[in-house]
Image 1 (cartoon, one colour):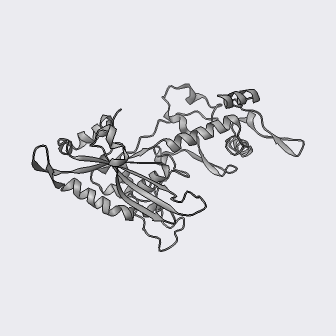
Image 2 (tube, helix red, strand yellow):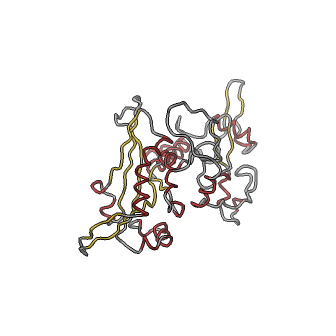
Image 3 (cartoon, helix red, strand yellow):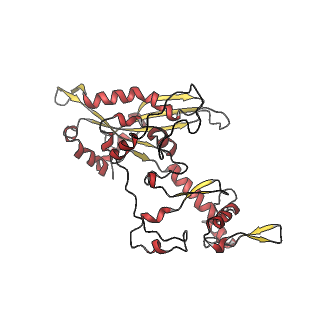
Length: 326
């Protein structure tokens, strides 16, 4: 794919809105958002949140270059805006609604005539914190999976003090041998089918189950003040756009932080780096509480220490040195 125009999401949007797609001069925008500390000092509590618009009508060698980005807003403050970012986004959303429904009179220099220019915001771009802020969908705790939604199979592990997610095998084909391999996983065979991915219409139906949260920081919020179902923290302000529910892809995750975090976790576990490995003594205790992988339980030795049996992925000292050289 050289340009977003080659994507299925773009073509699906065209099929859903043929009147908009019929005029190639109509503009399609992407919204990118991220927060950063402008002082480069993590001990200083301050945040600046960027909202940048990307014009996809430009060719691929131009649309992702700095000179062609449109900085819509800067949101500075001692903390990230969180849910309250919708307050700042409201004028932008109002303008996008007007540009979609009514358009704006624009002069075409090629044909030397005026035409009604319309604009559509086709998706958002950001990392996981940005996804949470813009979509209102939590990526933590019990309902962390954006695909499974209410069907997320999560389990709280008391020694690790976190949720773990064991139901990943139900995404495999129905005849995959791992589905019946109980011993290698959680002592259970997996017969569930993969969950249905949420569409925009599904999300709108879920929005009907709760009221919008109250924005602003006039009072300190407490957990349980607003009973929200499942993974929701608020209703996304982008749902005010009439075409939002027809999106095939609503949020794009850029993979820089994701790839780094996955690599650090996997490589740190293989190399047994202190503070990076996921194979800790607490992990072994949780395996025992879950009643799985009996051969990996931590054993009490000499009344004063625990000994853990190496796992199948444990590297020898020679193999670790080879990895460091590579």
